[in-house]
Image 1 (cartoon, helix red, strand yellow):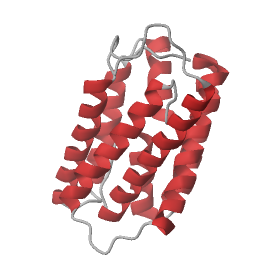
Image 2: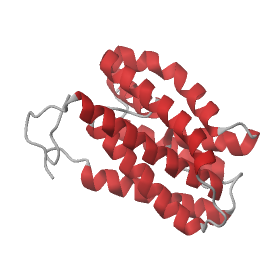
Image 3: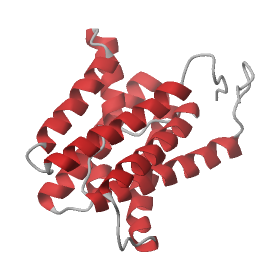
Length: 203
C-alpha cells in the first residue's frame, strides 16, 4: 500500500518496524548460519569471520560496525546514527537469542537460501522505509560517493562480490551457489518494493 505523500511515521510505528525488521533479519541470519551460507554486507562479513574463527556472529557483527558510526554521524546526522546503532545492536542480540529459541533438526540448504534471503530482504525493507540502516557497508558507500564520487551501488556490489570471492575458500561450491541465490532473493525484494514514489512515509 502506498504511503501518502508527506505523511510522517509515528514513534510507535518506527519502534515496531525496527523491532520486526531486526527480528526478521536476525532469524534470516541464524538460518544462514545453520546452513553455512553467506549473505552480503556486514552480516556476510560477520558470518565469514564466524566460519573462519568460530567467534559468534553477534559479537563480530557488533564489533565490525563500530568504526562506521562516526561516518554515519558526519554524513547522515545523529538520528540516522542512533537508529542504525539500535538496529545493529538488536540484530546482534536477537540473533544470539534466536539460537536458543529455535532449533533445527533438519534444514535443507536450498530452502534455507530462499527463506533466509526472504526474511533478510523483508527485514531490510522495513528498516529502510523507516530511515534505518544496518551498518558499515551502506554508510561507507554513501561516504565514498559524497567524498570521492564513487557510485554507492557499485561499491556495495564490489564488496558483496569480494565477500563471495572469499567464501570460495570457505564454503562448498553448492553452498556458494545457494548463497548467490539468497543474495538475489534479498535484492529482488528490496528492488521491487523500495522505489521512489512507491512508499513516501518519512520521519
